[in-house]
Image 1 (tube, one colour):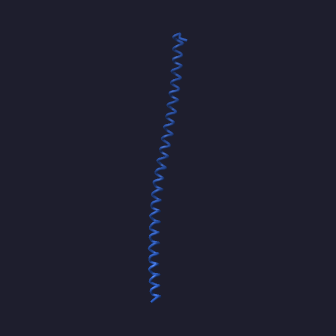
Image 2: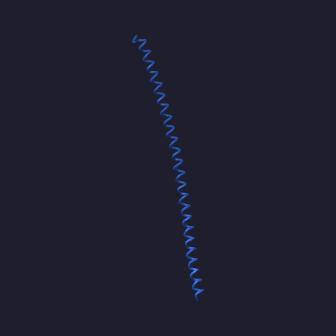
Length: 91
């Protein structure tokens, strides 16, 4: 009977070990799913970040163009004012 009892104990321990291994495998699959989800979210965030950077760069380019236009117009206005002053005889 001692042998039968020991065999039953080993069967029970083996069964419990197999259940534990199955739980670990399930947790591993779940963790893989979570990591895949994180990876997908990070890809989306990266794409949005790229789009925002491009939009900011385009905005800066428009701002530089606007500033150059203002500078050019200011120069032209100053030159026109100088010419008008010359024509009217002002120093």
